[in-house]
Length: 354
Image (tube, rainbow, N blue to C red; front, side):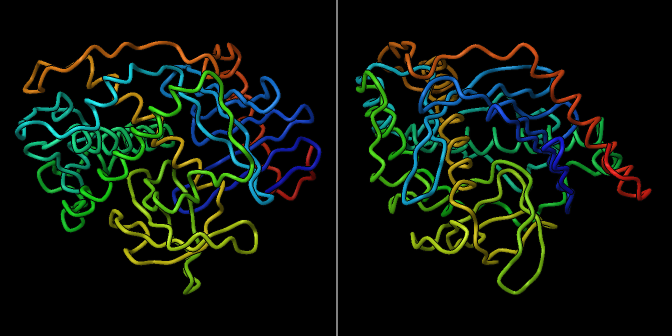
């Protein structure tokens, strides 16, 4: 549903409730559940700042706006970067594989998803460790989205035996993790290159990461509905994985993708669809954000818990990635949800929009 007067669009699909408000000042409010979403505003020419609200916590991220062959995408700008020696260490295999025990193995989200995702028993390099870090962060997001949408722990999640889980037949394979770890290596190199730039300088003729031939696997970042080539509607949820089959831009600024890994109830593996390039870029942005968090966690934990010691991180603030959160973001999301609920009530009753 769309209200031309308020600029509010409500999309309620299979497990999806997304509300978007486009404002005359080019700002946007996007919510994906109760008190969960972000407020986006232009910050300076070529940049936008988003204030995310998750679980009552607010934080800001900066994105560089790029136009490539008529397609507008927002590219993640890291808030912090590290010393070149730390990046080199993070991109180099360890002398011998290390065993590591994650602190979250007793958390509720892992009890829910552990038959879909199991951390590796050992890690030959930081890239493999970071791969599990990113997948775990994605599944934590998926769990939080379910809680936000349900307003608490859904009954079916409370009743499910954790040793069984609903995903026992669809665990993420070691082969898929290995392919993702290879991309992590490339992402580390990309962040190191960004760290060497005093300012972001991305020419419009450079393809965005969503169309980089070397980056084909994408980890789904939020709940979404898709229409398969067979005409079936199904959903994707965070930590499902898709692969971009080519870089040919089709009608609607879309490209051909297929599902590589998914949870039962989500789109079947090998389902094909056309997906907007901007949507793929959003997935890549979250992947980069989680990878940046993983690099920080790896540096802080080195030399402990089985991790080998390494060089100091040398973390410094990256000027282009600095922004303060919008203090009114939560109240704007709450108001948007109230407006959306009223729209749905009016639609059901046949009452014209207010």
